[in-house]
Length: 153
Length: 80
Image 1: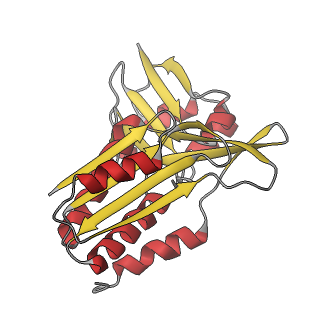
Image 2 (image 1 turned 180 degrees about the vertical axis):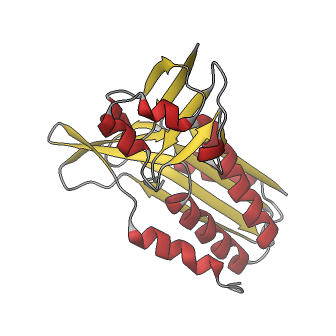
């Protein structure tokens, strides 16, 4: 059982990535995926994602290992963009493959909640020509706290 | 004799750049004391984490620095 965790410095095609992942999982009964993209609106012209190389990818790989240890999965895909993005661009793709759908749903949500609140990314957005750093949101920490309760699965 | 400092996220704006080389200082306190007061105050913030040569520091006050070390100041993450 394998995980494929990558940081991508340039644009990616979520459909092609998901197709390739699904083809690599013939024994899975289901594949759950989440695609995050840059929202349009609010006058946002661009988004920049920064990371810290010694921590960011190792942290994502550790997160994948936690999901694999907690649920019965056949495979896990986690792709995350860094660099300059524009509205409509894909930012993150998480997919989980499992014999049974409930493990796949839960693991995908677990990975996303941790990516949103704990992973080593800093974002800033440009609106009206001015860059502004994005602060953490309370709701992301609330999402994370759900997983600390004992038996969610 | 020098140290390399990295400033992530909004700390980059406070520091006026994402990296800076500074003269060697043996401890974090000595290092911060030599910086501009507003930058030092931002770096001392309770939610700022520190990475020493790429590894997270559990006890910044007890950190012993060596020539050529890299210190990264990490503010709360924005979320992926």
